[in-house]
Amino acid sequence: MADGEKISPGGSRITDQERYRYIGFEVFPGTPKDLFSNDAEKVRLVDAVRKRRESRDTLRDDCKLLEERVGSGERLVLAIASVIMLLALFLPWYSAYTVVADTPAAGVSTSQGGASQTSGTTGGVTATRPGQRANEEIITGHAARAKTHKVFTRLSGLGMFGSLGSVGGAVFSSGFILMLSGLLMLVFTLSCLAIPIMNLYSLFGLKGKPDDIAVMLKKNLRLNWIPLLLLLVVVILSFFGSSYGFDAERTFASLGGSYGIGAVFNTLSWGIFVALAASIVVAVKGIEI
Image (cartoon, rainbow, N blue to C red; front, side, top):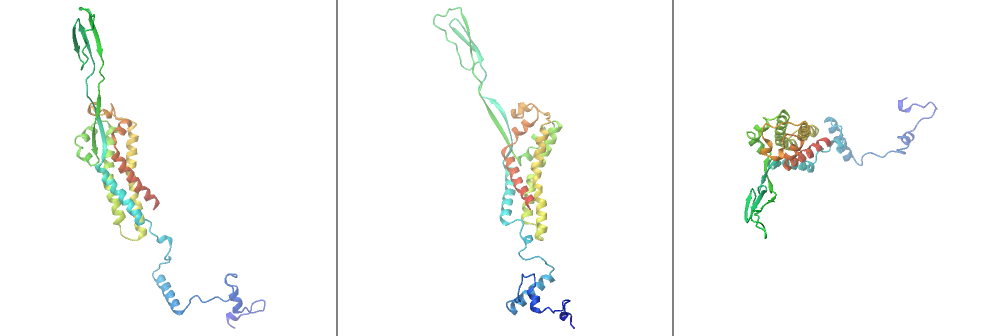
């Protein structure tokens, strides 16, 4: 007797109808319908399965793992942020000012009888008063408050390379903390030039499988944290302070008598924060991939 016709221990034989009834524990009751509506559909679907097995591709066409990790819209935003980093090099990165006086200080005027003398003042002549004695000397003072204004000097990111001989010489002849800070800011500028170029290549120049491109893109975008880390180190170092190797207050009053946190924030201009913000936008996307 064939295996399919063996009698069960209870003595009764399971029919095909009973077997169909219990497929999937009543999920598929009754006689199951044909999976294919016609022979042409059967041939088409079977051939598709065979081709997929031959290609060793076991994922579905609509599998979420096959979705693009960085869409075209996101690539556009990251590209714009990278271009902004490059353009920020032409903006003011550093600024310093010196104070210039418009008027001299006050002086003292004296009068002897009907004569009047003035010394060290701009205006303020004393006139003879009615009834004033001829030999009486009157001393009067006229306080003229000196007016001043600030004269700013600004330097762009790219301008830093052109001033290495002048500004760089003064910085690298000062105390160790200021020398180290100057070196870090030089690396900061170079990173804002090299990193956005690398970003653009990573976004549009990488070739290969989508997963491999996503891994490489994530790795490269992480480098956009470098400018922020460098600036944080410079700020931390400024708390230790340093001496200048030149007469800073005579050159620029905003630098103060010694290098410190106040000198840092008095020197950094808005252009450097534009570049920093653009790099952070790109770096944050590297976390999401």
